[in-house]
Length: 149
Image 1 (tube, rainbow, N blue to C red):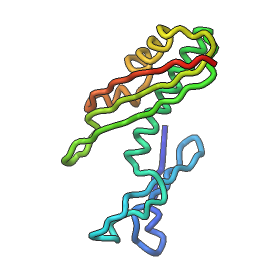
Image 2 (tube, rainbow, N blue to C red):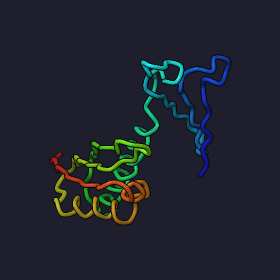
Image 3 (tube, helix red, strand yellow):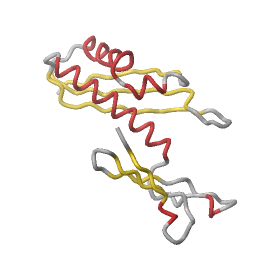
Image 4 (cartoon, rainbow, N blue to C red):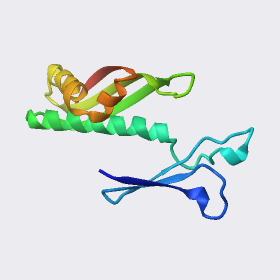
């Protein structure tokens, strides 16, 4: 897997903290820093997600992918899946994630709660590389609700 991240401020202005990531699969992702009131030249322009927000979003995508796939492989009639992630970070550098809570909302027809619980556990224990990596610094918890379609 490869990715090239380029600073967008390098093209003439040399200000701002925007970056463009070009992934090995041919996609583009914009990132930006928060504005800095004290030193505006060192801050972003709030034009895209922060890099750490993309880490959190990628983790959510990774685990939701797993949950849907595991439920589908179990021949469950899954019709929707979302996960809301809330996190806390360390106060000092490096400001790693220290707590992450994932709340899943799974919609389907006749899916047993035990199947959803098992799919989430399998994702976090075996398949989701992102959450397993983040689990080295963060206490990761989860909850879910199951909605009948």
